[in-house]
Image 1 (cartoon, rainbow, N blue to C red):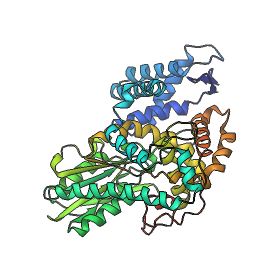
Image 2: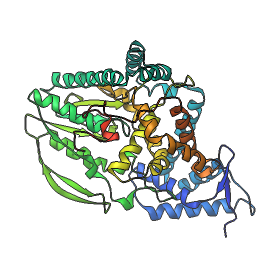
Image 3: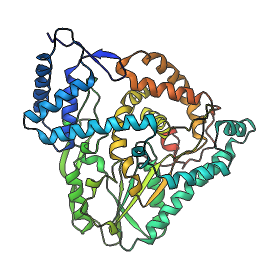
Image 4: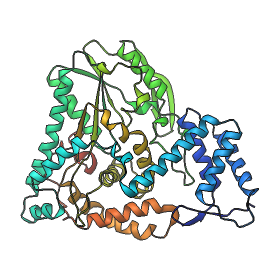
Length: 446
């Protein structure tokens, strides 16, 4: 029996001590630097437990920082300096994120595309849609369809600009990356851009990077059996990069095939080659991640970034958080397209958020253009579809230290949605709207 039964979290909560969490943290760090040996990760986690038990008396409750200190020591002493460095860097980033969230420090500021946000904010103020109070007034006056119309027009204008920028560079471009965090609207936007550019005579070959996932058993997972697909290292980045280089040079490559039901990848399956007048179109979370396309001339790449950059204050005069919008979008999409319960999406979201803060959002300012897919009216739809569920999750996860992240997000979103008028009839939303990707009823096939 282990001497250590419980650990103290940073907020003071006491939770059961679970060595599997240590193993998962070590394995995730190893994956980040190209390692995929779960047995070694488990062996190192066992060494961490032994080291800790040699230090303490029966019933001692270490805090999280003490556990992490021992992890670093064991990794270094057992010849895993590279993994230790990655673990230390990740630990430091988490610390800085906590501090910047507390005081809105400069480190967070460099991740935010301020120029684009100001354009969105000016538009929202100009259209008198910058607060819940104003949006509720439009709804009460029977003007919901008008709000939909002007919101969709702003997004479509962004897509028009992106297409025109690509067209201006078409003579040199070999690949277009459409990137952004989860549920930012990449799939619909990719379709719309492709439609516009085909009308101008351009041809595209779509590269589905989902086929580059490693086998499911090689992905990190937590003690609840939840796999982390959000990290860029879930993808075979060296193979993607190699294939992009060859495709850009006009060579044929054999794309792998990933069976999502079995969680298995088969290499060298589908031949792909682009012609002189064709451009590779890539829709990916991690399209801006440096290793994705390193070594490829910037002149042949166009990088597009998406985020629902709504600038709206809720009933408590706080700006609505984009991550909460995308969380609700993904809940709705996953429940329809993937038979995934919205509660599972909520409980998984800490993986999504951690990865995008580290691997996606920091590169947003490297994009050639940024599209805001946010609609001032969409929160009214989510109020109707998800409000009651958030209320249930607040009660379910309250006082559960193992589900603290889910509780915080549920409580914040529940309070936010409480202040907006619900809309049950979504018939005013166009069939080709980016929101149809999430609420259903799209004219596009996903």
